[in-house]
Length: 82
Length: 147
Image (cartoon, rainbow over all chains, first blue to last red; front, side):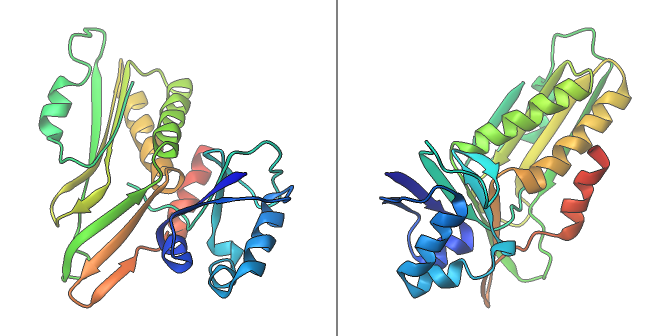
């Protein structure tokens, strides 16, 4: 089981802030493909990966990063702090 | 080093007065305060969303990186989340060092990194609706000078 978190417009587009998923994904990209295949709202949220960032276990990561042992994956738009 | 992520307003003046007090080896204190700006003229408020846990972690990592690059006696970062009214303080950084060059450079570094590497997202609320603030390419480019 893995916790998947969504923030900002990704959260709004998918409609939930967080969910627990049973997944066989071995990379972030595999997980994205699984999510895209689930429902239209996911396909829409993940349609342009260049507009998205990902964190694995609260560290910024890449879409080709492995997921082995990860407990938490978060998807969000580029950050706008400061 | 002190990293605070909070919803409450903070008093930048009081924070700055209390910062690095009692350390007589400090010759320079630099601070920056970010304020909620009404860009469009119609902003009623700004919402800031963040990623609890990762936010504190990312800010701490950025401060630690600054401490390895410059000789700093102390570092302070305060960043708010939740609802901001126009004119409200959003965040502040302060750096203290023996000489001003380190404090100035570290403060700029902290600002550049926390703009695009700390998980905060701003949403502007106006009379016409609401819109997520888009990240600027110039914010990403600003990181290049530190690499």
